Length: 328
Ligand code: TRP
Image (cartoon, rainbow, N blue to C red):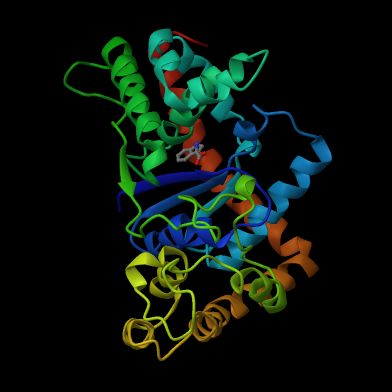
């Protein structure tokens, strides 16, 4: 079975954008691939944070992932800092990473431009990401578009290490390729291009039905529809129609098409139908999350068994890397 690796930052509870755009894909892939998934807390410390908050967010993310269907029997799910080899390999990779490549990264330029004093961790962030992936010799990485440049850099790092320390005809590290998520980008509730926690336009995966409805009800719809009797156009309703396509059955999606265009449904009717379908999918996830929150041992055990599987592979990789490099 080919091996995949992916990571997610410990932002706390998942929102439905993360869920539809990434995690549902992880859940589908874990049956087809040997899957290694990590909550990447070492990446999260490149921005200002408080230790208690990081601990809480890491825990919540692990619970959200498990509740969403990431199955510790089928994959390895662990917290990055529990496997010290990530940091060890990233140091080694720093020695084969051209500085110019790091400075070119759009995410680096973006983050650095918003800070007075830029710490080296922001610059080296993609080196740690390369270590995450290559530690497991993973060649496919399920991610969104925004990670494509980071993966290009992972390939440069793999190639550079191989050309110095592996026989020419026997490259050791594979060159990882992005496996882009099939779901289209989930638009924010306010209609802005991306659903993002920092834009405050998300619905949390574990929010109660009341909280969810309070956010859905005022969500942006086709601006041309002022009155209920105005015919609408689902194509101009990226938020609500987009969510219908993600959560509702094909029949409901077809029904929305006709009833919106024919003004038989107002936007609130359409949102109510969406709300029903969202609840059908999210209610079991919420109850699993609740059960996990009440049984912390289950979460600890899942993460520990994931870390153990990860460490076994990580140790083998590091032993080989060190051997080839004349280290210990
Ligand atoms: N940088 C990724 C993000 O912000 C998270 C990440 C860290 C990751 N290490 C990874 C993703 C390795 C894929 C593979 O979304």
